[in-house]
Image 1: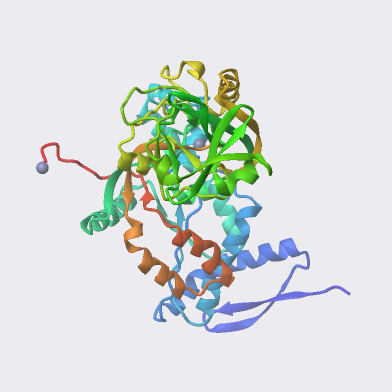
Image 2 (image 1 turned 30 degrees about the vertical axis):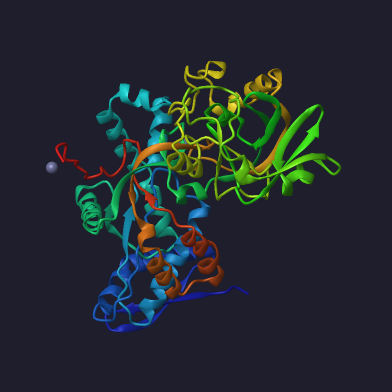
Length: 477
Ligand SMILES: [Zn+2]
Ligand SMILES: [Zn+2]
């Protein structure tokens, strides 16, 4: 039996009649779309509801510098479904399209097109020319996106989109930033931030959350012998051997118990709760100390990159855990947020042997010019040769990668502008709890976790294609 399909036909006065349609689903859809377009059904649904109560919809705009694909459909179907439903209930739901034009994805596309890879090459090419290329690249696929949006039946006003690189849009961002500044919530900070050495920019915690992968990294235990007592050594664990040249201190939990055990002619110091996990059962304990007693002891550095009074000593810290490692934490203020804060508090020197492209500088000749992760094997070999390696194996853990270019991220001390979101954390969480989340666990779970572990938003990027920050600092104040 041949099935017939019909569509309501609306004239100015409403219902007029049925129209026979195609049975081929694709042609049927096209016929419906043509009907909508011809009769301006979307526009008229807005005109009809314009006196109704407002239901506000914001289109989080797509980046149009790549072709749309299946993954873009589902979220756009939701974005269509709810406004459509609310319109049918008599609400006025304005739907303004937008295009997200700024940011790293666009720059990377242009870099590929020009066959260049670094920020220095972009500067040689010329910023003005580069930015023009970015602008052109954004428009490349807008037509493909518009076709997809129309074809899937997404009702949104494509005729007056907001475009994030236009002056009026940028001015609205500036207006927002000014309001934030007036509340004292915009500040410049020197902080350890997740940083992509390839893109040469810090990333926000939101961006970092998108790029975790489970990878195998070296897990090494190294020996840090006490000054003048080379046979007594702290046993220290790390999964980032490349950070060891920047080591300036060891941290212990002052309230924990530490033991000294005899092992192959040496005395090793580690936390008692970690003893069995690290050295197995049956290790011979020859002495016991509280963490507080260890504080102040000095040790011989693996790589003496600084000659400062305060360096290479044991300090107390409240973040030392007994969950992994040895209960003695290697501190490199250049590469860790807690390390950096502890360094400030304890007056530790700041050793930075790595440049902004993630390569060792001449300060660390063993691996000068090498990308840090590629230096791991060299450093492990070197420690072995010096008799400072206790053990080395591979360790599977979650490590963040750049969400755009897949380079392993480094934690790097950097100047950046921040919005003090944490100052309003409680209010933000309270607002989020008012949201009717579907499914509910997204709001309490994933998004809730994100809000509870909120950090100040590092919003500046050391890049070229973005909203310029309207910040002028007075030189005489
Ligand atoms: Zn990157
Ligand atoms: Zn001034």
